[in-house]
Image (cartoon, rainbow, N blue to C red; front, side, top):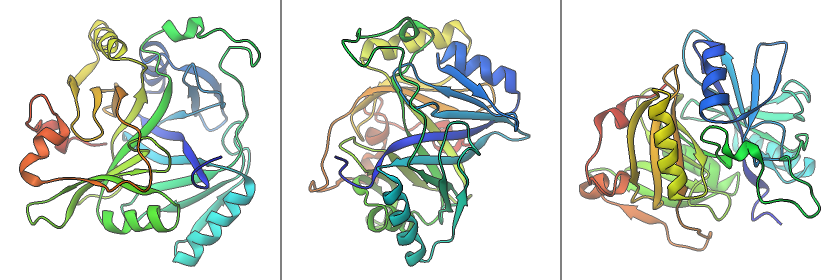
Length: 309
């Protein structure tokens, strides 16, 4: 049973500048599986070990960035309950009909104070992971094509009013604060890491004056060796690497950051700890924020802080 009505991150919709260039990156370099294309020109992908039809959707546009980020909820009843709670809080919601996204049920969409669109949905077609549901093998040939992440894991978003965002996620959607970074005044949060599960984060936000910005979408690998392999594949394919391989102090994950051909940053990572809602949140102070972000270097990369899409 889920800890909350929200189960997990379910999908992200990204804008790319050249569709086929984007398809090549997400399919052949990152190693996602293409699962469909729709009449709107969107291309759908999943990781090899995900069972739902899609987790990454791309479309061609004049600017890179994120259209929306979606969470799967426990049931249609949970979707109705959460829609009601959002409205009671004063948030305007929009109902997106089933089928507007391929193999995806009705969605509830709303705009955060940070300028990001978030969606909730309860139904998505189970297309499996290529292995039987009875006596399965441990992996398939798709697990060796490209970087081949296990799942689309989380995203980090940049925008204003993150204290209001935290209030919505905690008091309306049932998330909890896992870690946070405070600014020089020792009180105001620069960044917040939020979870609806036992993961160190399912979504995170950093305070930024411009609303609606994507810092990165993250993909889970199953070992440090796979992170190093991802770095090799990025170099072989001339992918622009931002930083890594390295370790975070925040969440303790091992990581590498890079950019898709349109300038959308993505992360491939493994590790991190498990946590629970009764745990006291971890605080990082301003004087140690370098170690919090990049534990080995203990210093911030200016591009990592400032480049968003």
